[in-house]
Length: 404
Image (cartoon, rainbow, N blue to C red; front, side, top):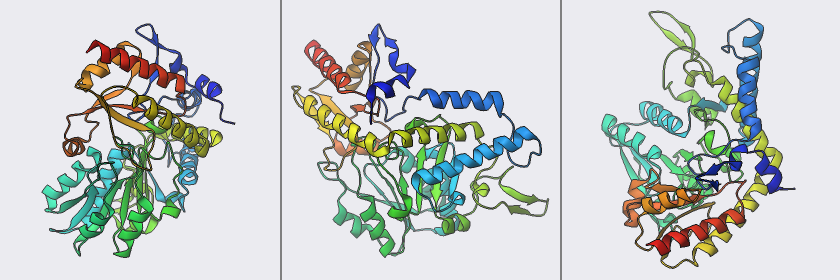
């Protein structure tokens, strides 16, 4: 059973006090806290298995290599990839998108070709394409959104042309919480022979992701948003695509042989993993995924949806409340403003009351322009949050509102 008290004991930081107030951590969309087992896995790795992996003949190197490759299999199972060869470790979602933007553009795009993104994208899924636009003179088209924060599917279909080479879109919006109908988006793209990249940074911690069922071509996410360490992430790619694309970086690990005349690249997935990989981070990420699996991602989703419904209803009781993003399918993110109170002022005063929320444009400035605002306060929930903490948030917002 889902036992919130037991779960909260796994996260020692939740017992901390901020300005003598119990910590209420609602900044999970930026990064999640880490359970004790993940931190212990990092400590164990450095104290008992620390040796550079692959090609080492000594015991520690071989054991560390086994742990790293077992972690790859754990990721494969977690997202139901067909093969561990389709799992590439990166530094996070941002590097994974940059990898695809660079390698895909080099191999598959020419001047005038197009990429489709959406109005709700994180900067990580905008800037890499702008870089490629400047480098290769490609363009990107933007799917508009409705007032509720849902994609305009009719407009999406009209954006395709014979120049469209890729759709790159977020699975779940980090601002609006919208869970996009990615299965439909993928099917529409594949009808036209166009591959799809999904930014899953805000999806994998909250909903079950099956890359084979989605039939997605590329899927990316970060470890630190799913209770794992920072500096580690995942690029999933269909094997046929990863075989086709050139390496993103050169150096050690990604080579089979090197001479001054020629380099032969390594097999998958290693040709995309230049340099010493984060073999400690990969095993800690696997521990985080196993932790999620033990609790059950569907159990987590039920709990978080209850939090979302409860928080939405309570927030709407507050005078002057404006919530941005009320899609029918929504994840546990609420972005809001209260009256004319600036989001930074609200965020700083909530902090003094022990409540951690995110303020600003949330690395989605184009979306803020679309909404006609500078930024929002964002409360994002995780498996260890409670309705009592939401009540504390509501009381604190009311206290700040009355101050203004």
